[in-house]
Length: 104
Image (cartoon, rainbow, N blue to C red; front, side, top):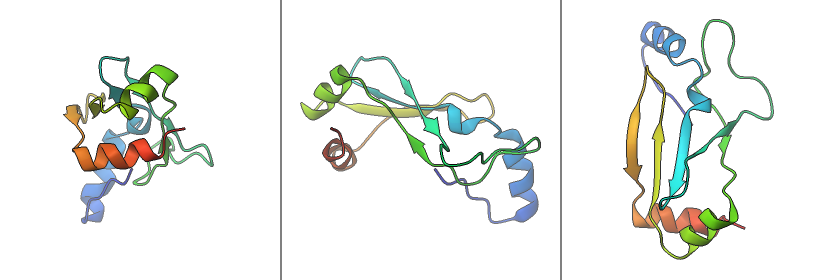
């Protein structure tokens, strides 16, 4: 995930407000429970003052969600952070198809 603000002053303020966003990104297949991201396993990218503008995320889907995705079920994503909420967005078919290829 990349958070981009061109203006350095605006970026500094925004990244302070977005602390923890990397843990609030979720994916949901069909009517299965939301699965929240596992973020930044290689190193900590957040500090006392702000979050990073780049995070590496992965999602551990259970076998039921994987099977549903492979059978063509809708995949939705969103962000549950008070400072930056993204309501459920259904992925476009081409994006969903590309993600399904990566599922074990």
